[in-house]
Amino acid sequence: MHDTVQLLADAPAQLLPARSLMAFTLASHIILVPLGVALPLITLIMHGYGLRRGDATALLLARRWSAVMAVQFAIGVVTGTVLSFEFGLLWPGLMGRWGDVFGIGFGVEAWAFFLEAVLIAIYLYGWRRLPARTHFLLGLPLPAAALLGAFGILAANSWMNTPRGFTLDAAGNPTDVRIWKAIFTPMFGPQYWHFVVAMLLTAGYVVAGVYATGWLRGRRDRYHRLGFTIPFTVAAVLTPVQFVLGDSIARQVFQKQPVKFAAMEIVWKTDTRVPEYLFGRLHPDGTVTGGIKIPQLDSILAGFSPDTKVTGLTSVPADQRPNPTQATIAHWAFDIMVGIGSALLLLALWYGLVWLRRRRLPASPWFYRAAAVAGVACVVAVECGWITTEVGRQPWIVYENMRVAEAVTATRSTGLWIMFGLVVVVYVFIFASFLAVLLKMRTCWRLAGEAGEPGATARTPETDTPYGPRSRVPAGSAAGPGGEGTASSPGDQP
Image (cartoon, rainbow, N blue to C red):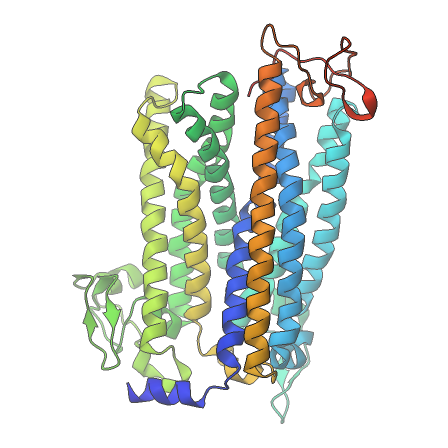
């Protein structure tokens, strides 16, 4: 307890508000990241399916998802830009000393961002204006651009976890930078693929959850079945893959960042036959209370043998490891992430078994209830993954090379708390606007579907087939953009 109190007392006053501001903006931005990284791929899968089958319903879904993709991208621009500024404003020690080594990742992300913006604009413009095949082919680079952006960010973060590609001079400053080694660090591969698959899972379950909710409310037409099936299938196929990747990255942490692994598993002393705790709380004297203790399991999971030696937190001095509270936070976040992943694996198996045996979707309402909340659960798991990564690395901002307290700004804490309050207000407005736009789009699409039903008189531009001609409508009907009316297509659904 004395060590923890002393560490807190020695920390600069501005450290708490700086970390709180960074944590809030990162946690907010990461909610949008799955749709930004993975929705382009899911949209193009639906688009390709629609073209291959000549399916107007699939094309309509792809067009609507592309509109959501554009709105999400616009919101992500704001939250991502704020994060970029915060690196320089809040952590000048990090960027000033180490920017030349790992800053290339942010450069790659910036180029990917501009490329993705151009490709999204072309893709949106292409509906009805380009030949179908040309339009689809022009959209194919979109997922690659999104993955390139993730590449840049994960390269920077993995470097902070396992810094490589430089030599320190007599003053402790990095020299002789080797870019390729700085990008492709030991943690880059496991962290990148674990993150990418997590984004695909989350986007798939989030999108499918919208249509699962519609199914529960009685909307069981082909539009909702197709809107559910394709994104859910993508997520379900990747769920067991993610389980393997999660196990792989945990072993890499065990080997490359043993003290972080000790925090994730609340291991106090280095030993063999170490038990696994499901949840539980670590105390300053090394005792663990609460949770479920499973003898020897941690050693078995780490090295496939109870004789595997697991490094404990006390293997390094107190100022070089997470304190008991931080270790408990990392441990809980890790357990929640694994628990959600296990539940999603069961859901994916349920879906797969029903499909293999009966060639149809599950009929149980409980399946769709679980599917409806799976997307939210995935977002929680993503947040927990980042908490595990960042809190488990404490007190280092650059693992074993620079402490967080050494990198923080000299700005007074009062100013940082005011900035924090302003950012919270702005972000509440931004996300409220995002939700309002999505709800407005949903309402318009539902009205468009109703306009396409027999006997309906109102018609909107949304009711055209994505590649069909714009048709004139009788007087009194709603007009499209520029006064040009449109006719509904048989494939439109609410």
